[in-house]
Length: 70
Image (cartoon, rainbow, N blue to C red; front, side):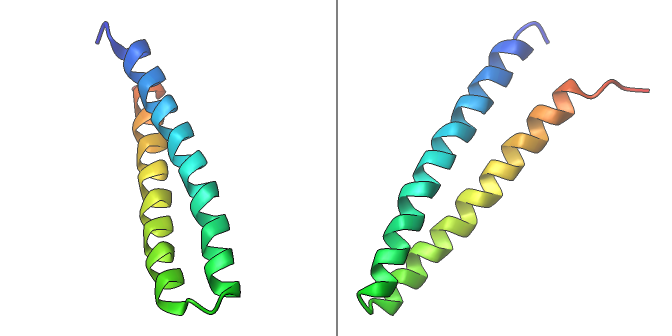
């Protein structure tokens, strides 16, 4: 477990990139909705849901690494 701090930093960086992509795609989804592109908007919505799940998963992994076993 010597690499734990490095791995934690890498997961945090991945979470930050996911958050940035999420923000961009959420804006795109809003624009698509305004343009009446329902199918495209829904497809982007699916991607947003997956990005959110991945972000939560990475956060859970990081937290499990920092939890102190009893």
